[in-house]
Length: 91
Image (tube, rainbow, N blue to C red):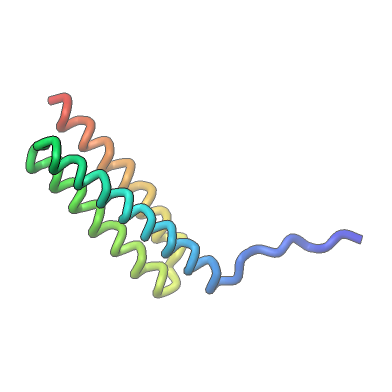
């Protein structure tokens, strides 16, 4: 007797993705504080501000039930932001 695999309920999925976005926002806050202490450029600090906005948008998307879209936006957005930060540091 095998039981069918059960996934998360939609409510659990929303809460999980909201928690992930909240953790990402916290991580960006820590990195921003470190960047401010190192005297980084305003452009680099602006990117971390954009990451805050991105995380907040994902939390709102998850709250409204657009969890998959929100996670795709979060993943793609952070890859772009980290790539832009790397590029700004090296050019």
